[in-house]
Image (cartoon, rainbow, N blue to C red; front, side, top):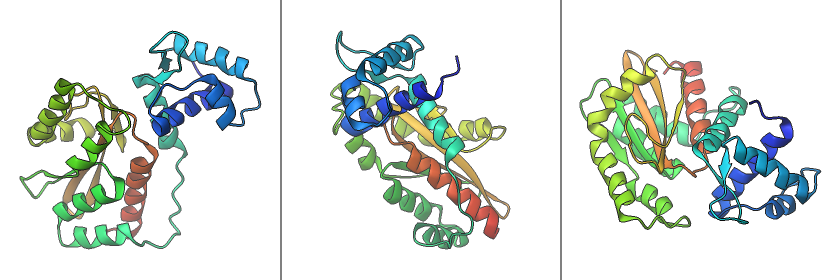
Length: 243
């Protein structure tokens, strides 16, 4: 079912507030934080509809709502479509560093720069290298056990297992993305992660005859806008400057 504009705005509000607060979101919180032009009762009815459609769920009776994987996919798709890239802007800061690292074939440096910029676990693999570079596991764990308090040791163990097996799974990822439009967003399980609590955003870039796969890994409840915008800007700038 296609959502109308009001339903889209309310779903987006639920997800933004859940990302910000780390707890189920109520209709009254949405009403007070967002000027949607409707009353709390109307928002409650919309939340019921969104729950029936599978975009959100209610962990406890008479409590607030939490996004489902379908809700996160909707949220990420908004940014895939709506992020505008201004190619007239001068390349500076983070992308100047990445240009230097590309020119020196420093994939490890690119991954470290990405991790610092995005605050996520970042990965990278060049077609010229056997090694998979990873940086920012501490960033990932900080978000997993921070405001959202994942206390299940088994779930954290699965995340550690995913980290250790990324190297072996990268070739499978390359096969998967070769025929897809980029960047790709995986909510929950992905070709390189099996934990239900993680999401992965990946892209592939050309540097002469070299192909570089880059990825950002974070909790499902991360703010998808920043990494998606990062990859779109990087792709647009590389195409413009033909690095």
